[in-house]
Image 1: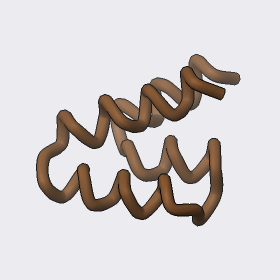
Image 2: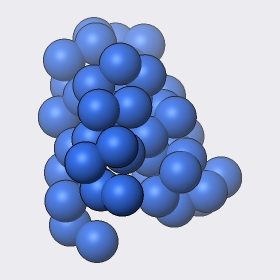
Image 3: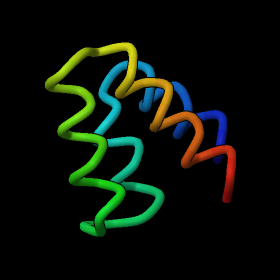
Image 4: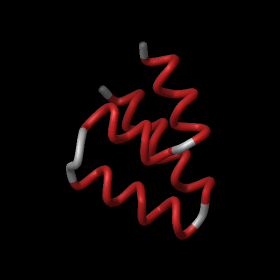
Length: 52
């Protein structure tokens, strides 16, 4: 299941984080990072998914 989440995180980073942690602080941080730049959002999403 983590492979599917990582693929989703590459395509839509906030969705990948949402599937992992829900509507928590990490989700809103990822939305901010994705708005500032797509690559930081991807890196953060993959980190959150790989960490858990």
